[in-house]
Image (cartoon, rainbow, N blue to C red):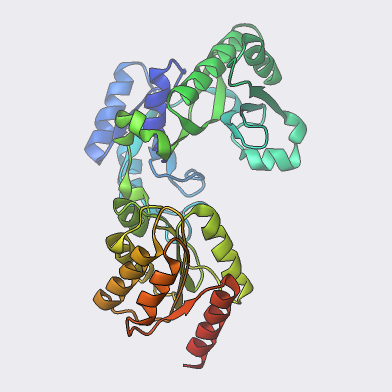
Length: 394
């Protein structure tokens, strides 16, 4: 689960990570009031930052420097409600509903600090770079020698010498070095305590007064661990998510929209990947990733069909179910119920294997519905190809 910058800063501040002061605002009046509060604490310039779940906000016009309260008001009026387009939002952009009004920082130097899981080594890794303010992928491609990494043994945790080595890797010394060691240590503790999948500070800055602080923050939380953090789960902003994906989650379905023409419904992520591969080999393009899980029933299957059919690009649907926990006859009943309740105007190919597969196939064959059942994966792929050709001819 993604959270906004202001929420990430709240989380990290609670764990002792040094942050740039800021106040969230949902209206122009709130923005001006926030700036006034910061001014009372000594701020003389302000940064007005759009809050959306995407990077590149500055390049899209979503981050502005204000030298007065009047400029804060002017920028807030311009940014609030705009459809902010960045390289991560797509051409349609994302509507700005909240702003972060922050105390402008005198930046002497910018750095990068990030924590994530290195799946190849099965260990968390902390990465730092003296090239802050730049996407870490760009640094890795153009100047890999400027990235310093430390892998953390999960049985031991972050060791003080590792935090010091990372801080030295930023080229810091004196008080700034000590602050960086404390910052990195606190960031890692926050990452672990919140079950995050990524905690990224870009940039971490050295101020003109020699202090170290974060002026931006990104945190992604592990959806599977949110039950342990109900306070963090409440930070979810469904306005930032695809409406269809939100609907799918309400039915316990895992759904990701893609750009293809073949809808696919499966159970299990591995089978989903294999199904998308076979669709491509058959000459189609997957329109979605939809996993109904191991406890699928008639209601969830019907919900899955409704979600898939909301995509106007879908020209055929392939249902590929392996009955391990879930019974194929139960899925078959769901398919029949869905076909009866929904205006299914695209070809439907159904492959059932595993528990009660024969019973499921018999139910489909005897249903009188216009669907094509398959036993082998290649057979299902061939029928997808045939359906797509027939759609092109029509």
